[in-house]
Amino acid sequence: MSETVESLKSVLWEGAPWVALTGAGISSASGIPTYRDHQGKWLGSNPIQHDEFIRDPAKRRRYWSRSALGWPRVARALPNATHEALSTLEAAGIISGVITQNVDRLHQASGARTVIDLHGRLDRARCLDCGGYESRAAIQDRLESLNEIPEVSESALRPDGDADLPETYIQHFTVPDCQHCSGTLMPDVVFFGGTVPKNRVEACFKLIDNARGLIVIGSSLSVYSGYRFCRHAVSQDKPLVILNQGETRADSISHYRFSEAPFSLLEALAEHVTFTQQEPAHG
Image 1 (cartoon, rainbow, N blue to C red):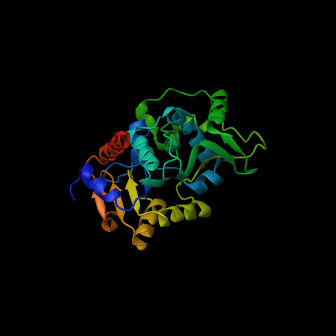
Image 2 (cartoon, rainbow, N blue to C red; image 1 turned 135 degrees about the vertical axis):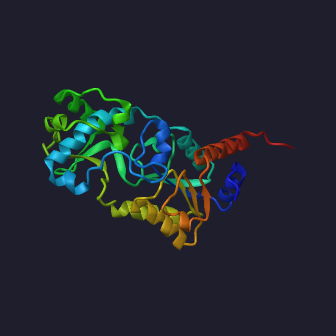
Image 3 (cartoon, rainbow, N blue to C red; image 1 turned 120 degrees about the vertical axis):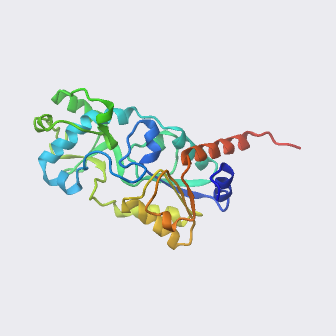
């Protein structure tokens, strides 16, 4: 199939609505780096694992010291044309909802109504002791009051509000405790090695079960938590459409593949929808 707006339209218009599964690739244009390159190769240092964060105070210092530098860029990020395109397609009834592997909340900021944050949300933290929540913005204020935050280059910033820092700085970093019980604060995200809550996974399956099929946008699907939804859709005899530069884990089971400027195709499709809706009625 040729990779044109018309060919994408011919696929998505048939039996809509669809569910979109999005990955880090769609947020790169908003200034948030991706984990992997187009060949699936990991970029940057190894991420902190879930169990490491839970049991090791040194790992928590590493996370919060790096996050103190990386978070402001995530906080300033705005939805880009791909986020806006998906919101347009949802409003037009072509997409029934978004399952996102991202934690930046840019889908919600773009006006999307039905979004499942598969891996959680970076804009708040949860206390591991009392279960209370605190906004990430408030935590940033405390991080900056407790520590001297150095200047870093843009190239040092990593996905999910992370940054590369010297070990000497990390060792002397002060981590804030929960304001309610002095317990341990953890970002409300699923770390690598962690488990997505069962009710969240079931909500994703239900969304797919009630849709025509699944569209993957901007993800290599290297992590099983997203790949499982591709397998589920195919097992239900639902078509799988992939819009992504570079290979993905689900290429062999996909029905349609768009890899040449896939985001531009999606954005052009949304423009077509908007134009069609604005056309005056004749007769």
